Length: 82
Image 1 (cartoon, rainbow, N blue to C red):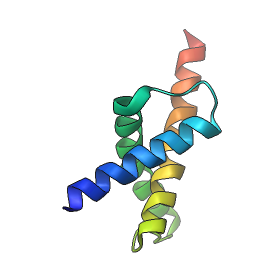
Image 2: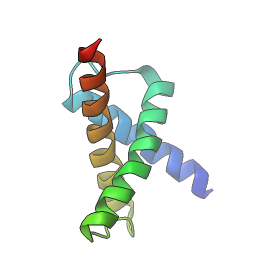
Image 3: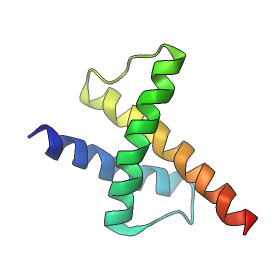
Image 4: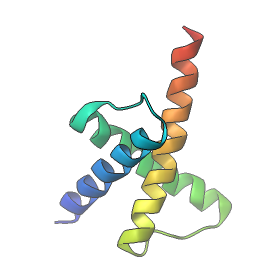
């Protein structure tokens, strides 16, 4: 059941990040991947900053969202270099 919540949070975070950074929509599967990778990245970033926000559903969503935005921003930089 934890995996289902992780996937749902990933989809939501990826979709939200795609809305914030227009032109970064990757579809449902892409949003899931971006959101899950963003959750991992966000967890690492927040851990490095000493922030613990993953204890609640909202905290996990915020962590995944921040990570997904950072990931999409970095992907945009890589795309623009080509």
